[in-house]
Length: 223
Image 1 (cartoon, one colour):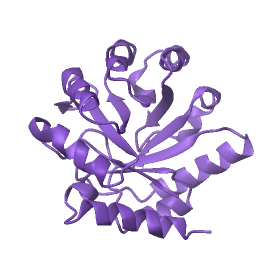
Image 2 (image 1 turned 120 degrees about the vertical axis):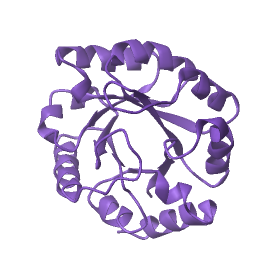
Image 3 (image 1 turned 90 degrees about the vertical axis):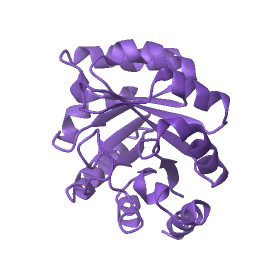
């Protein structure tokens, strides 16, 4: 069955704690926490202080997505909110050898390690790092702004990566972020997506609990 991770991005940070609690009560599996530094991406949001507040007021698993230019520094900072997952961006590293060290540091703190790629990055660049990853996050829009149109080429990228993971017996979950909604989630799931990051699809749903329940029911019937 598909796992659902509502994104923090659409909600105002002043009322984020209440939104997270509602998502948790509505059956979400993770809270996808978009951390942006205003450098790696134009936007800036989600301070460590706010995530600590979220962690103190909910029990939902935190899935921290570091869209930052200094991932090694931010791993050390954001470990304090006790996330289940920390995901770094391949493109954040000028020296790609430092990716190995970053993944090691995440695991050192007993946190699952993820790596993400932008839409224009070929998934094959991740091959050397996959043995050290628990999750790969495929961006299906350009990172940094909620509400963008889903990029159709994501389906093929997802399918190719899923087959490579299966062929090599890696224990890696695949997550998709950007424009995932009621219309495309099933096709994504059939192509290998394990975790659906949903921003506006859940944020704008009239009944969030019913929406999440329906998505899970539909995915559970896939053979």
